[in-house]
Amino acid sequence: FVASDNKESLELLDRRYQGMIKFFPYMLRFPKILIDNHDDWSWDYDQFFMRPWWQESFIEAMTLARCGGLICRESNLANMAVVFSNSIRRVTRVYDANKLSLNF
Image 1 (cartoon, rainbow, N blue to C red):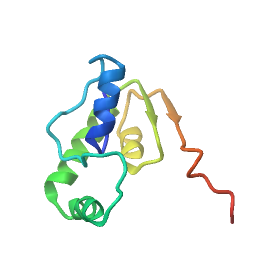
Image 2: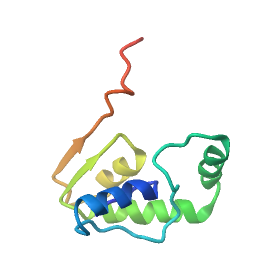
Image 3: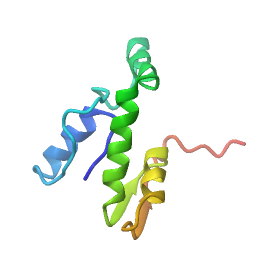
Image 4: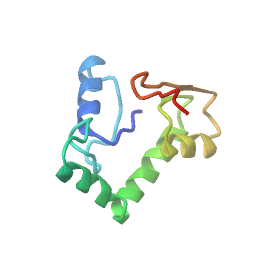
């Protein structure tokens, strides 16, 4: 099962793994991976104040919680899945090396 906040990632994964991934296709998601203009950012920000976005996020987290393992970035959605899970045995965190900063 894959949870994502954007459609583009799901489409790329679905193509790469030839339909082997499972996801909820009709949930609220941003169309692209990157937010690159004010209108895009505004839509994403506005979702934080909408009940359906939170309900759908909860459904995805609970579905992830039923998996045996989790590959994720740092996210509260992934953390929630781990906390509510009786089945996740392994968590692998992936990081974007371009976003890591060692400047303190």
